[in-house]
Image 1 (cartoon, rainbow, N blue to C red):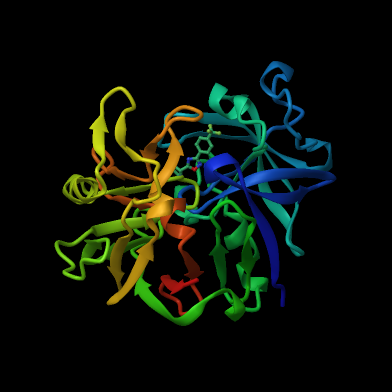
Image 2 (spheres, rainbow, N blue to C red; image 1 turned 90 degrees about the vertical axis):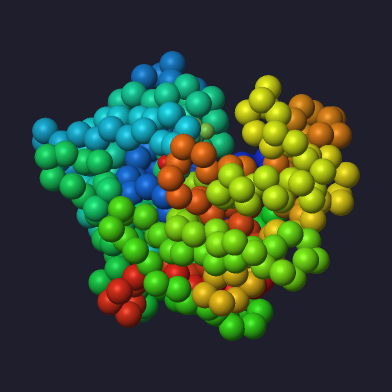
Length: 326
Ligand SMILES: O[C@H]1CN[C@@H](c2nc(-c3ccc(C(F)(F)F)cc3)no2)C1
């Protein structure tokens, strides 16, 4: 049975995390994204003008799936589209001999400009893979039957290399016990329900955060508008229309954000919520917590995930998420 581990290297401000992946004879840095289900890459089929500074998948090692195509748009309206090949994909020593690899023939400027990332490796449920006419499986679903345990884990860090594992849990990566919660995969996401919250040293957890997805491909923590408002009232932040979100002082006094999941309280340090200066050198920071307005559910992105050890587990039949303090 297979198992393995791969580094997750942060971009500036932990905006995204990138991991080395071998596809055919090409090595690329991909953004592992538990909020989508396509494995796509810059390729020899991507216009040269759109792929400056990127490693590219050389599709000559693959077997083209004739007549297949894909097209994806992300939450921030970035996106890509192209053709499909079956090829060997290796992640941290775990091998998928025939993985659907989606070669980009067109890519939005925000991906072209982000030269740290050579594409995405989707880890959501394969039910939302965009390949047509025959939907394809994610890397995890492809290798799942061969894994020692049908699970993968995510250990992101603030400003330091973290890791993903496939097929095993690294018990040295967390403290205390793991709290498991059920996952509703009906929309293709790792969706769970979060409970009460509190700000700073208040222990009076109040309200209920509600339906949330665990999304490694989103940088920030998107919460109900009332929760975001309550946080920034305590943090001395304000909603800044020009910035398009809440901002707060970078001064290191931001309170922690505490949230109950499965009856256990997890703490997001205030230092993670003073996310990044709005412009270089500014004393005002863009907030790591923002309102989920227009999304319809909460997104527990990297600001939350780097505070915990997360286990994406389908080994029990029904999918579940495990969280532990780190
Ligand atoms: O769709 C949801 C699934 N997870 C979220 C996600 N968003 C991206 C993304 C990565 C990189 C870029 C860019 F390089 F800056 F363009 C843009 C979006 N990857 O996963 C949103």
